[in-house]
Image (cartoon, rainbow, N blue to C red):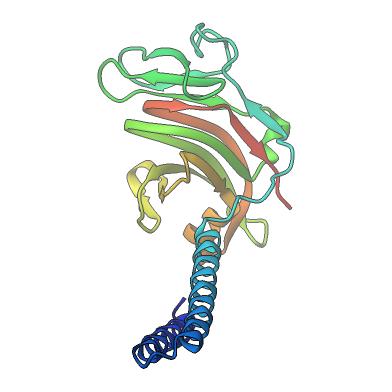
Length: 237
């Protein structure tokens, strides 16, 4: 934008010259110089507008790349029947059952509300879906909310298998390990409430220093007061 400042300066200088010529009664030449000055001014304005438009386009966040078809999707089509009654989920913990209902703001979404202390439920994946290494979902975290994946890892030599819970929270902090729960916490900043979770990358950031690599995902856990879309599980190459 500032590179066009010279045109503005030239335009102003020519207008000044035209005015001075007018003062000396050289009206025809003054008018000609004024027209030229106006032309330079319009060109400068047009160039500045073009640069502002380009800058706005470039400042927009890039659209997320297209993802392959999920190998498994966890849906909530059975609502208002409880997820526990559907036979697809089981209670992980909580003294009193949560309230489940459809979420009108999220297509196909579930709204889960705790009635007392913390509540969570687990979804065990079918065998073919344990090969997934990427999870996509849209969620509104209300309070005490988290989405977990139970991740299986092993050493590069095929030894030392282990299983950890990976908790996905809102925030901007490095991965944190909670030894008492055998759990890693990852703080994410979703775009438009859309979470894109690469489990391989999370293993690399947390357990990779110990020589462990991602093997598969066993379960999904949903906790707290949350609204969540169907969860899409993919296997990325």
